[in-house]
Image (cartoon, one colour):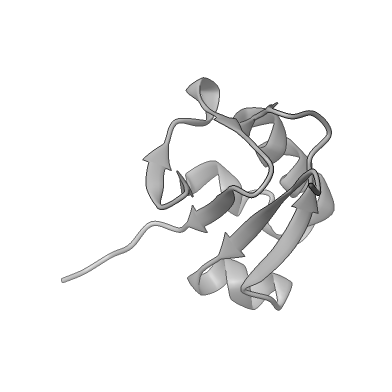
Length: 85
């Protein structure tokens, strides 16, 4: 099995990096979500600042990066703040 997760980007994040989803290789299995977030910032520096203000969902459930680990095959979604009025 590949040691990879699926990253999904929404709204402005998707526009800045030019793709909605991409595979991303894990360094460890499981890997801390906080570590993965730091590695995503390095790979996509154009959204690095934005990642400080997003919610992150793992397999469609909002996760806390400091308390969550990810495993091969997981889907990690980066969700920018949503506004309404």
